[in-house]
Image (cartoon, rainbow, N blue to C red; front, side):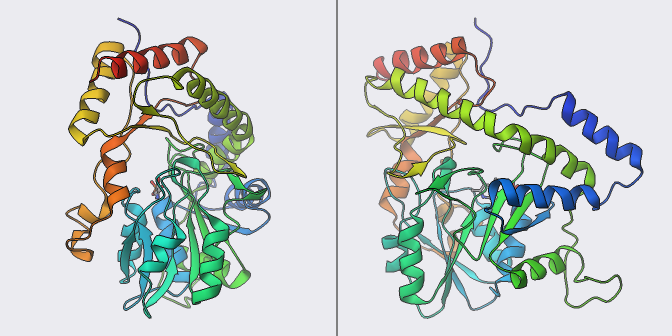
Length: 372
Ligand SMILES: *Cc1c(COP(=O)(O)O)cnc(C)c1O
């Protein structure tokens, strides 16, 4: 049997180890100069110069961004249901209500039209996700925001370096959150980065990150401890330097998979919208017309018969999770349900070899041809 090809693989090298060692030896471990430098560098590289605030997780970044934008009890925020639960969780944690809407079948992202249909006088914002590393329809959401006086927030957890019509993701919303979890396109161990539209939002996120303090012991608001450590920032700074090459490798791997799978029976390869730069956090195919059980058998066959690890993101839409279903009893989102039954994410990470890519293609072609 061939060696198992993992669905994701964080790359930690000597540079990251040396950076951690440097911080540990400095004796300054908590949030300090490394975090400040990481924020500056991230802003320049990935957020179009917007002020960035580093926090201890992507989920904290969403939560603090929402609070900084004034979201709270009585408010509604429109989110996709086809995403990681952190998107809606962060809304619920503010005391506001997440309102779920459907996705575009091509890009898997929330659509402006679906969001428009569920707007009420309580809707304060729409928070689409740049899912799998593909940018959402930012011009469409900008038009909606102007028309209906709602804010746009970006869940960019999976989309470091993606862009639309030459504009980086992270520059479209009141705030945008990038996750730095180990399986994301770059990591700091755990962490998140919040890119802010203006100084007021940035200051509010900074206050909430640190017990409401700008000056020590002069607490202005009730805040959290959501600080990033200098140890984590040091890892993130090294990874930021490596991200462009990794992204290019993900895109090259995706192109190889696209070509290899073009004729695979019943397999729909990922679309890229005009003007979009996709950074392939996930390379997600559809098994057209499959049920969830058929798709699960497909994933099991890849693993058991071909030692190819594949993931399913996400098998249960948020509006049907035990934790969130009370927000949307009886809701029907047909494209979300169809995607949840059909999607399979194949390995696309930058440490794959040409031989790995060939094995992945051959495995998918074989399993699809067998009508699993
Ligand atoms: C990873 C992820 C988050 C949460 O980020 P963490 O750093 O894990 O807290 C939020 N939204 C989406 C879409 C994600 O993929």
